[in-house]
Image 1 (cartoon, rainbow, N blue to C red):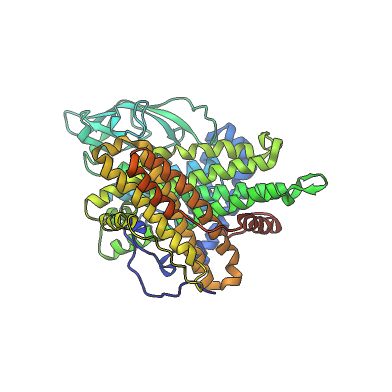
Image 2 (cartoon, helix red, strand yellow; image 1 turned 30 degrees about the vertical axis):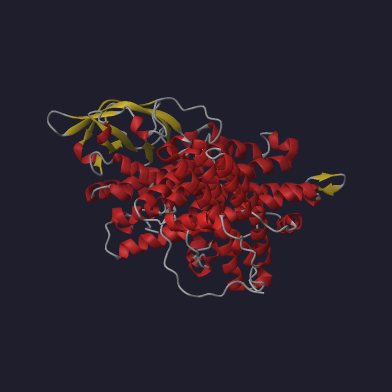
Length: 603
């Protein structure tokens, strides 16, 4: 048997279109497409983590200022300038190459946070929105690590609500400076940063929310003490205060009053990168769990041989592999969009931000997916260790503490769930995404005879392809019903929005995993790829149940009576699946991990 062999080239999906359009494996980027140069970069980063970070984890946790030297060494290797264009002293790599590096660095505990803050939210605002003079002045030194960067958005009274910020900027009488007053908190790298990207309201006006490039040497800047954090202790986190600080007018970033756009775009790509990075942390945690399970014996048998442990190892690997599939698929889409815009003559600002802006729905979903997979993997890996997992003398305690922040970083997972639905609906209202046509078709389908046709027996993913289409119908049923019933009140029904987002999260993972496995089968044959085919089937079986539960909760949140019964029947129809032996699949996945003594499904 084989997968579908349709080789017709399809147009690149627009943001959110995965929900209403079919995708082909030919157009799906998978991590196995890594080239030799990218592989060499990954190996270099692995060596860096192994020699520079791992031996000093305890020391770094006790003194985050030691991170400065590690960033300097990363800069000497070119790692700090990987995203900086070549004309400003960086390597100018594309998002795919950056992603391969970011993933490996994600296993570096608190150092990965400091690295990400410097290369991402700290440097990217200048790369994306800086003037030519600002780029020439700051980027070469940020690329080498001579300058370290931080990003100052959050305040004591404003987190997810960025426009609730109180930091104020007033133009001086001579028109040469902006005078900043206010404070920021939870600022990563604050203890050693030389450059701060700061957001403030000019004249305190919400409509004049603006970004500024602030240098450490500007008079009036001061820092609070290091925060006593639960995890990521090796990253410096402090409050930053501005007291009548003079910022030259030429250090205004982008346009006055457009700071919200800078903040939003930086967070868009930051959400994707966070997912990409935590995959590395997940692989590392799972690898540690596998090694421990092989070594630890109970009843004269390695615990890796017990069914309960195999279930955990298999499920961790499947969820991780599926999340990775979604992450690199979206990476390919963003990267293609950036190249498309650049080829069309777009400015650096437009082509570097255009990809993440186009796929903002997907970026928000990925942030949730990656951080929750990491938490699941770390929690289960600790459980595999039993009592030793709770001991600080074993590695899982640090991993457990360090992982938790990722569900808060870059907007909480609750905010990102709601953002994904909000962005999707806005695309529809603007006419960018046609949700109405498939939504109306579902209304007709609910009162028609169910489809009893059987999948193509020659298509190994025939059942999954049908299930995926039905899962998309389930989402449109839920979202369409909620919009129709609640209308303008929907934004206040956060529970319904989050349940709907949970359905969307399953769909993008289901499709991405299937496309990846399908591509592997077409590239390497079914026999070599059977384990991936089975992983997809296992994930689909469980995902349909999760969609059903989330969907029922969403429907019950806004519908009742005959309307609820009709929609519930439709949901049940759209989430029906045949039984498969998920126990055997997880055991086979676990057996491969155990034999390889670590994570082995592409690394």
